[in-house]
Length: 411
View 1: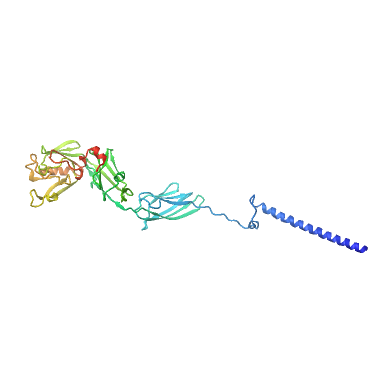
View 2: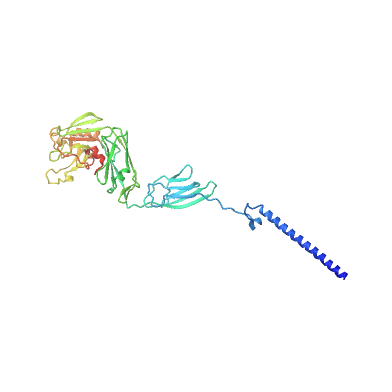
């Protein structure tokens, strides 16, 4: 019996040792796990748990910073006169390459801050342009853009011609712009046109017809005036789907004031240079059958000789009054066949009778003097001829319209 108790006591002691060792081992494992957990939580951001990869020491990667936002404006149905802009929002432009369909480069400039590139030349109608742009942010992040710009295609384009063709003109010279098609939006056309006179003098536009608009001052130009005519017609809407084809720019210089005053009653013509009477000539104006127009005429052309043919105004060969002959020293004062010219055949009537077909007849000597001193834009004022007033449409009949009516720009 004693042995049995001893064996049980021994078994109990070994079991207790084993239990104690097991408990100690579990405590150590728990302590180790808690220690590892404590070390891991110290390297993560507060309030977050570490990922297994982070716990294992794996490397982390961040997204690169974005480049600037690059845009093209405008891009569709672009008026060719409107500048195109390339913007870099959040950075600066490093290069822009804009080309037309043939590959020709379009010029442009970049703003001082590098944020915007702008075209510096006009575009063309109905074309598609390619834009390749590069920009970079302040952090060095790049952006590359390839885009297109499409210009509008108008129903019709109108060209415009400027008269006179001469650039050195007299004090009576109006300026004319003639369009290739009738203009339906005349206000828009005039808004695109301007004349700058130096020294400044009041002037206004007036429509002579649906295709021609003229500009003249209230009184004759001052001698020495410079006239700069500008027409911003490219991109200008002229009505009915028509647009101006291109801009126009012309400069004119006004020389001394040469004014001739022809009196059909006295049959003489006085010549004034800058207001001073310098010469008086005997003349013969149009006969009662072909009276010369009265009013202010402006010389539009001069030729050493012209073949004058009455058939050009309806008097045909075989009819009374028909003529066709070469005439010397001719200066045109209307499109109705009126000239100042040499007329040796009427010297006997000059100073006493009006016998011409509407021209101002001069002796060969006086005609040569007149030809040497008068030119495009100089003035011939005709009075007491018995004829009607020179019509506004008869080349330069602009001065027949009173100033108030001229400013109203009626057609």
